[in-house]
Length: 392
Image 1 (cartoon, rainbow, N blue to C red):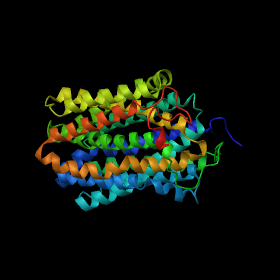
Image 2 (cartoon, rainbow, N blue to C red; image 1 turned 135 degrees about the horizontal axis):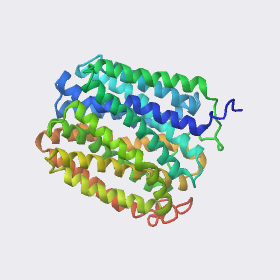
Image 3 (tube, rainbow, N blue to C red; image 1 turned 180 degrees about the vertical axis):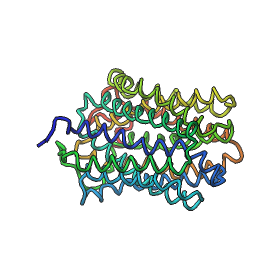
Image 4 (cartoon, rainbow, N blue to C red; image 1 turned 90 degrees about the horizontal axis):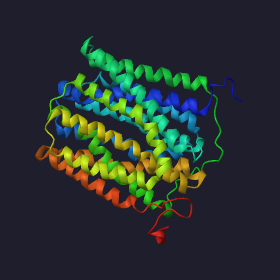
């Protein structure tokens, strides 16, 4: 029984959506400048680091085994605390090995947290409200990131605070919020008991394929778009923070509206818009040299990713309710199969031709666009795809 009206599943998800970006957004904003200025990284080292960062995501299927002994809600809070500890330690070890180790720790917490949070959200939200509710969580995270980048800009430009103290502050706040979630909320039961086995069903094949290409494509954006801003265009750490600030301002304003749009036009139309836009954006990345054009592409690119809510709501509509927790871990693993390989492999390509890296991203977006056309107008269990039903 709830002790106070504010102790609701929705409020817990909102608090989680605030805590995560405080740590992760700080890490993301500072990483490229920190590794270049303090550790002398090139495209090769940043590619290795980002590949290591994705290994915990590749192993996300193991969440189902952890859930045999720990409840989902409890595990989400523990994972969030791990993320905070990893970010806290990031600035203390400015060497390749030190950065690799703290990145793996941070990433383990981050990926397990994202898996379980997605699972809880899909279990706690009704199908009719899920697109807009998920969009609202993105908006909340965007507001948190917005404040993080504003504070970050001030800490760097006005106070000239060292990277070490900024990492310590952000990671520490995340850990404190995790403790508050642990002691401040009761355990919320799911309407459907979740399977404690690994789930890999033939009828989910289209969702798995979309997830695979999303992982490969997103790594190019996450790793190399930001690195392009620093290495090729010459952005400083404060300029990167300002760019992220603008980026999340747009997410705050439009993410919930995008969720509502998905509810109206359907998953296939939403993903068609996303992938068509990404084909154009990635191709433009290959040839950009102007810092303002690069910044614009970065913001547009991130905006398109908000439409990826449609991928989650498509799965929610076709999945058996008891499959959600296990399938969340499996889908994260599929997402990270390419993510483990892409950063290191394309780090080598980057040395030869940065443009080729983004044109490969264009190819991934084209594959996603073709696959998205197979989503039915009204996807439900038994009507998962337009063609390829024999595979189900």
